[in-house]
Amino acid sequence: MMMKTKTIFAWKDRESAVAQAAETLQNGGLVVFPTETVYGLGANAFDADAVRHIFEAKGRPQDNPLIVHIADMERLADVAAEVSETARRLMKAFWPGPISIIVKKSARIPDAVSAGLETVAVRMPGNDLARAIIARAGIPVAAPSANTSGKPSPTLARHAYEDLCGKVPLIIDGGPCRVGVESTVVDATGEVPVILRPGDITPEMIREAAGGVRVHHGVMSEAQKDEVCASPGMKYKHYAPKANVTIFTGDKKEVAKCIHFRYYSDSMQGRKAVVLCLDECAGLYPGCELLTLGAGAKDAEAALFRTLREIDEQGFDAAYFHAQEEKMGLAVMNRIIRAAGHRIVAAGEEKE
Ligand code: TXA
Ligand code: MG
Image (cartoon, rainbow, N blue to C red; front, side, top):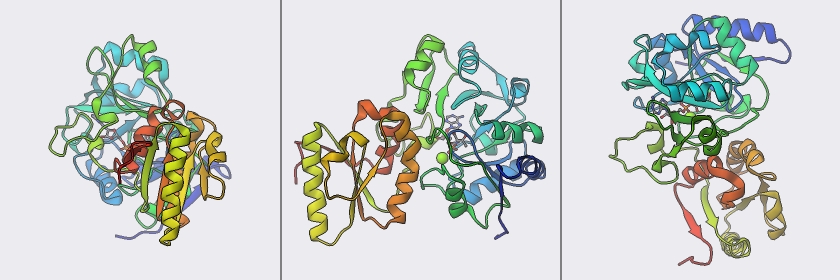
């Protein structure tokens, strides 16, 4: 069913953005709203029908659970039946902020939200506008990223509009998202927190707050198709542009050599290629089409999804990603590995 999609610019009229978003959520409607990570597609987390519309609008598989967003600690009990000591420590250290914490779910949260799991991921977003909307609505808000399933997450309202126009009644434009990659997802039901999806809150930060940390093995490798997933989101190909993305790792100069070779053979065959790298490597690619990701991990997080969309907007057939794992960080590497469909070339060892 197609509907008219209205956009409100929050910087022009914040009060009506908050009021109309809250009212739409209360009435069982969907609202695209900004958070500090990426734009979310929200619905009343208590309303199974509203939540089902999220899955329809995104084309999202039913077995992938949603994150529930709250605006203040007083409402945590609406969502969680049990909050471990580990979870409490993480909430105290990082909320409001870009981390989703998995706890035992309350009976008020329908199976449509948790995809039948006994747990639920809860997040208190760091973005003021997001919290104002949730607080005004007076209900917890279930919200995945506001993209079509399989596309890069939206870091601008325009991205969400491109994916969801005609499928949602309201988009709140709050400008670009500060962080740019989705929240860190942590299972805090046990004693040691387990990172299921890396984000801006790093393993080191979590270790410091909780006294320990594990990174789930699925974070940097492909989950087996029939493996029972700790985080169902891990098994889907994600963030993929239409262009083929290939990652190159290894010594800078070797990487540049490999990429130049591929780039040259592409142009001989009439294929349009582009190189993605940090600023410090831009000089290695004279004469090449280039999309730079900034100086380090924070910049690369903020730029990554927008850049993946630009690859398609500019009609490139191939994208070569010059990886610098140490400098780019776990969150960026995790997203690009999925975007590349796990095509990784160790430079110097390329066999063809
Ligand atoms: O930054 C974010 O987290 C954004 C903004 C809108 O808050 N939301 C977001 O939601 O990225 P989504 O649905 O795109 O990703 C949620 C991830 C999925 O990988 C899902 O499998 C995992 O969290 N997840 C949610 N609930 C879970 C649970 N109970 N157990 C394990 N994984 C869970
Ligand atoms: Mg998502």
